[in-house]
Image (cartoon, rainbow, N blue to C red; front, side, top):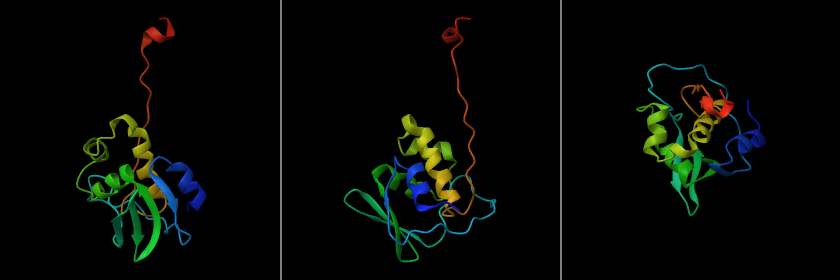
Length: 129
């Protein structure tokens, strides 16, 4: 399980702060049937001045900025991670958006586990070959 500080550190581009009642939910096994990230039942996203407050079963868990709000609203399991990021207009920060969903999964906030592969595409000219 993730601690509050680990969650904040790893999601810093999207999560503004965690409420004092923040907790990580028990880790779940990967579930089939979803094309992409899907929030657990019981989550409610309420718009706020800075983005949105995120509640779980009525308790405030954390606050996300506008980008985080857009990503969480798109996490309905109907689109794969690439499509969610593209539809949110966050291609320039795709790796951060992917890590946001990985952390949500690690904290137990998703019905499914999000796995990503990171690779680096280097131009051969960079190495003088």
